[in-house]
Image (cartoon, rainbow, N blue to C red):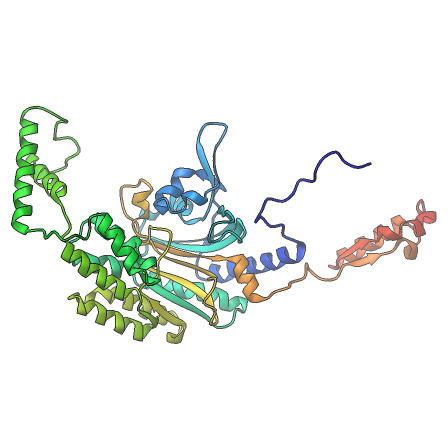
Length: 453
């Protein structure tokens, strides 16, 4: 009889995993756990379901449109995890105050929504991550360990010709501070890196004009100082008239005069269009610098020097590269890309992507340093931290593995054994000896005459 119901189909871009693919994944996970364990990393697990706020704080909202979020029956806003790092740091932040760095590894499914119109619209919405975090260890030696371990894991699996592309958020941030820009202006430029790298300087400039960063007006330092004095006078008058909140709460050691001066500076802060244009030109040139580590670093220093910025800005990057080489990474495995940009906004230092061979397409994984994440999650201190994660599905595809599920299964025939019970016993003996065996129920009628014997 025909069913009155339509079949319940799988959600778009979700995937069923069959025995062979799952066996390949299990074997890959086991190998990587062993490799990381030899370096002193221990496994932890975090909930699949977390408060949505955990991920919004971490990413600065970049992941918010891709979260599987909903209101749970208890009324809390929750989301399926889109990654592990923030949850790992939440779990370990209190322990990270100790003098000994924590070495943590993890694996499991993560979820990111992608509609058909999205850049990743054709990709699965659920995939498996395996990664590691080194919490409480400062740069640059710890950076070298993480980069080397990320490559070492792939080499242990047999992925051929692995290489790493390293960027450094700290270089860009430090360079931009040389132009006396507001935090708003620096954030605008940082968020424009991807467009600048794609050659869209005109589009970025037009948006900067719209937002008032670039104009024909020239900011006079004397006028800016006069504006600050006027604003300070207004604030003092408001305070003397008792309007607004009282000072003295949560102000630390600052005097009321200090607070007034600081507030006046913030309220009168304006970006000099000339400085902004110089910063934009420097950044537009810098983000196009990439290549072998030695050549890219040298070219990056040239771009910075042309803008009047000391080569000291890149010192941490060169120390990170040296640390990775000390860990055994070959120099020809390392490329540097000053224009590396990520959708996740919490990185504070080096960041990297991992590739197989000359493939410039999908990365096998990546990571970086995020020293400020603990404070973003609500803690009163910064903990030096960094880590990385593989996309295991991409790793297994790069391996070209077609692992079987454990060997051939021996089919035991009731007809040959004389009865079902004899076939069951024969299969049991084979399994005791470590062989895969199952009764061939397709042959059950042939052996039914001896079923009771």
